[in-house]
Amino acid sequence: MKIKPSLILGTVLLAGCANTSSGPGIHANGAIKWANGVTEEMHISASGSSLTFAAPPSLFRSEGIAIFSRIDSARNGNCEHYYSEQAMKTRMQICDNGEVVLIVEGKVANVGAMARYTY
Image (cartoon, helix red, strand yellow):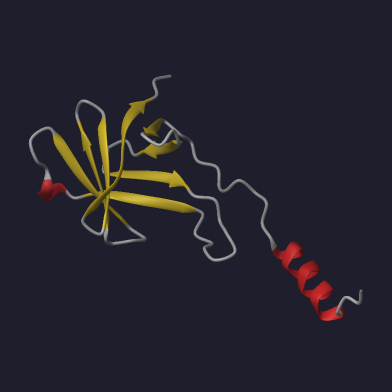
């Protein structure tokens, strides 16, 4: 069996470029536990106007963070609405009782519960 040198070189280069870090560090003061079992920590700004999530960088995306900003004009009863800075068609609704709804392109993508840490 003969292996092509270009295949070996390509594999070595790809492995060398892979980033194995877990993503940027944020000072988490809250988290969302999604219905699918995933828990995502986040930093809630002092004013509550932005939510910052650590998003591990990949070969195709290097931002490292995801920021959701509050839409002040869209408050609906006891719920606030946020939009993603990186993906304009991604929204999040967070209600006073901690219920969270993630909406992607107008469709519910996930639901969960939010907790704010106290120190």
